[in-house]
Amino acid sequence: MIPRKGLTVTLAAPSLTPIPRAAGSFPLLGHSPHLARDTLAFLASLRDTGEPLIEITLQPGTRTLVVQDPALIQEMLTTLGPSLDKGRFFEKMGHLLGGDSVVTAAGRAHVRKRRQLQPAFHPPEIARYTDIMRTTTASAIAVWRPGQELDVRDVMVQLSLDILAQTVFGGSIEDTAFRDLRCDLSVVMNGVGARIMLPDWAERLPLPVNRRFNRARDAVRAQVSAAVADLQASGHESGDMLSMLLRARDVDTGQPLSGHEISSEILTLAVAGTETTASVLSWILYELARNAQVEAHVLAELDTVLAERPITFEDLPRLEYLNRVVTEALRLHHTGYLVTRRTTTATRLGRWTIPAGTELAYCQHALHRDPQLYPDPLRFDPDRWLDDARHPPKGAFLPFGVGKHQCIGDHYARTELVTAIATIVRTVRLELAQGQVVKPVARATVRPKTLQMVVRHRQAVPRRDAAYPGA
Image 1 (cartoon, rainbow, N blue to C red):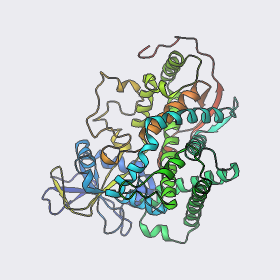
Image 2 (spheres, one colour):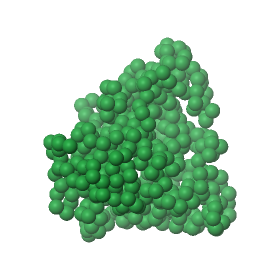
Image 3 (cartoon, helix red, strand yellow):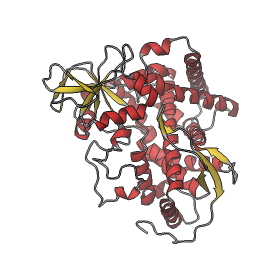
Image 4 (tube, one colour):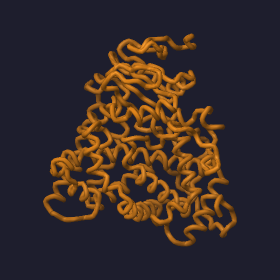
């Protein structure tokens, strides 16, 4: 193979097939400075090489292979899934948050934790959460005023945290304590992404930003632990997710989860789920403001399916066009930029043999924008998900991952996205504030760097004044 511009070639022993290595690695820091300076541009540049595998260095002594071919990604996550460890991203997340959870654990520990938590995400529970999501969203909207300018991502983070608090804690945390919890969670969410990308030694430096992160994380764990202790002491069955976790038993030993384990699950759920959902909600509102026809189709469908009543769990599958809007947002604006796995033994991936201890990674954000997989990839087009449309191959669309580590909260997340958007757009219209340039940035998730929108009255839409597919 002839090396492409900007690449050097190394061998992935014991394989004889060469794997190109990205140029520009710094001593001690590897490619971390490129990721820190402009994460998305760097990962997109790797994809632009057209290489199915390409090597980068995140810290000395560690090899990371970015998997870019959809078939190889599918093989990595499904066929090879049981034999792979979670890798650096999830390992560091568990370390930073102070304990393993279903999101960060691997092997039998992951299987055990997933079985313990799965009942909290079964359809009857999701149905009950839908009412909480709707009423919490309606309460948030009630304080918005026409002409008010919103920092939409900040507002969506607050909304997602409020929904999380209601579904997990049943509103049992006092208002003052919850405001502190929300503030601390914001610090943790903003700090996790950067720390995962940096070398391990960087997080140990006695810097104000590191001390602030550690204080916030410890405060969140203390708040959650206190809520667990209070519920255990009272013996009160509140019917929320926290109560379900307290009832959960280890399938092998029959033992309940410890307070530390419950705190780890909730903290990881808060950081991973809240940040991700808030970012996707922000992007959907952005696209509706930019695409008047898409917005009109959403409103017409809501008018037809719901009439004057609020959305319920039973309505979700009937809102076909809105579901396609959500799917398209998960494609164009996917919040994941580097998901990892790690080989535990010499592993065959495609035509390569990968040594044990090698990090494997893939980038959903870049994958979902590949013009070879998605015609006109930067165009927001919900109709690309119609049943008779050309769909991407396996491994090319991974909104919630795939295989044994597929996101346990995927149905919860989609339910929150559809319910919140349906409730918001029927009440107000959000317009983009003038003069801003909305760009994606990679922090804990891929989110808008700035997204200021102005609240307007929602004018009543006459019935059937805008057709939608399926009307």
